[in-house]
Image (tube, rainbow, N blue to C red; front, side, top):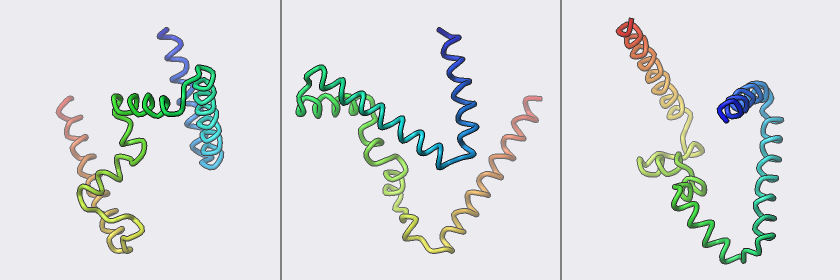
Length: 123
């Protein structure tokens, strides 16, 4: 079983690495995969004679107990930005975007310095 998981893990890394150079093709292939997956789910539910209301209840229950319900429909980034009162990207002006980008670069530099110090401590 471990060999199978490892094989598909490596295969995924290779495919993702190659497709990342072609984002439109990557999006197209991903979209086709998603549609085919949900088509399979839909037809399986039909074959099992699961009624519409039952599907709604069962699907909601599964999404709620797995913690996917809110993040699937709203998204974590949207929730966090709402909690901290952040503006939407379309509402920000160029200066705000540049300031945010500068802060992110500073944070990345700080993280790099901390990582370097940790590596030095380990040695």
